[in-house]
Length: 215
Image 1: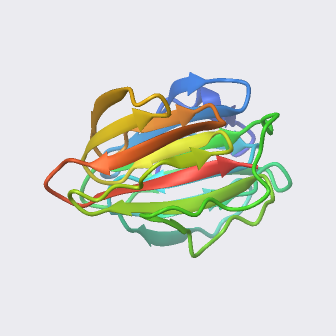
Image 2 (image 1 turned 45 degrees about the vertical axis):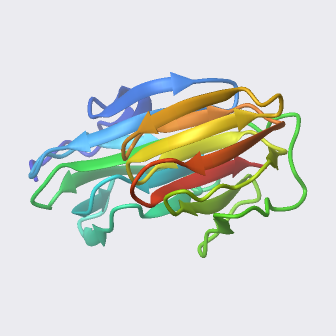
């Protein structure tokens, strides 16, 4: 990794390989992409952030002011939340894998007016085994076999769905209006709740996604 002057760093929104995608009052979503051997500038995170790895890779991370570094493997679909609001982080990351390093990051900027006191229970949804160490976010795993449907469910919250697999979904709202939604790993959708819908996997493979619920 090229040496950098440790006094110099940028905000994460100004890091060139953290590509801004969209932002609203509650979330800012960005797409992280590094080719093998490519590294970031030193950059600062100061908002709790949901991360989902799109591809499997190996990452080298070094914090500002520290001589030691850590390397770790990320599995495709790995998801986690780092609590940068209470523990700001300035670091540099490098792709030490053999393919593209790609992650979706979503900053938890604020809590929506409508939230759900209890977790969503629905076919194909399960609570993520590693829940964030913050009350501001709740994580779910979504997995629907071909032909499987959630039936009518209610999102009593706002949040973000990030695709982990290819998707070919039929979405119906409370009125019965129908649309087909196609996507691929890394695609993501912000949901303004509350609202009702049903999701049916009309594709030929298992649909997998991560849902972050803003609490």
